[in-house]
Amino acid sequence: MTTATPVTIAIKNIQLNPGSAIAIHDVTWEQFEAILEEREAAEIKNRIAYSKGTLEIISPLLAHERPHRIIGDIVKILLDVQQQDWEEFGSTTFRKKANATGLEPDTCFYIQNAPKVRDRMRIDVTIDPPPDLAIEADVTSSTTLDAYEALAVPEVWIYTEEKFTINVLTDGKYVESTTSPTFPDLAILELIPKLVKQAFQEGSSKVLRELRKQMNSQSS
Image 1: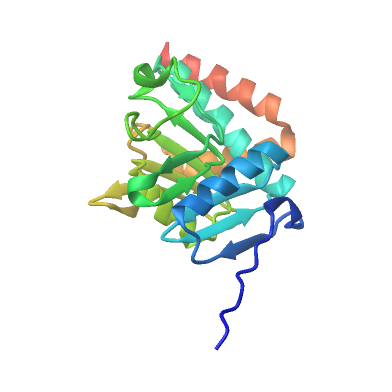
Image 2: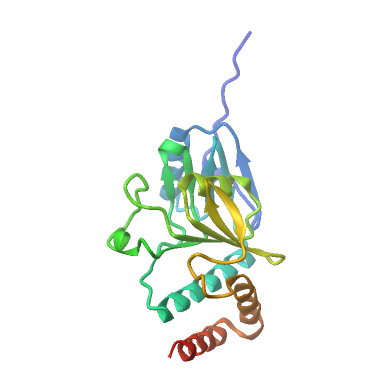
């Protein structure tokens, strides 16, 4: 009986249409790290999530990119008005070998832990804390949420055209919440979808200016 030779395909040869994704199973941690290095060398823009031996490669749509950018700008205004320090780390690659987990958020923020990472150019989750808040647009993959749980990110917002959810880590699992621990005094569950919709209708800059003006008037 002969043993089949494993097929190896370079990540640069995997072509994905915008909005599509591919899942590859039985990927070892060493293979995952090699893929990250290859992707960086080839300057490939696809995003990844890795958990429990499954690697998912995602090619985002513009319709995926815009909402999380708008939401990130909203978060900055809310934090600034509340005079909270923050550091945004965008789609930084977070990886944790002990949990065999890797993840790139659409965007993420350090808030409570901002002083601990303000001088970092790279995050090492073996010594650095995870982000306090991560934001995702249109997550349909269990790989992504499994990875967030393994990294112990306290709060994850997920935005889709159909629904916006606040997911709070509770006893190692995410539970949907009606309130945000980051903004306990604001109706975030209603506010975010409303502002994103307005941004598409009226323009992002106008909506963000009006939000900052409104929040400043309420805090004065």
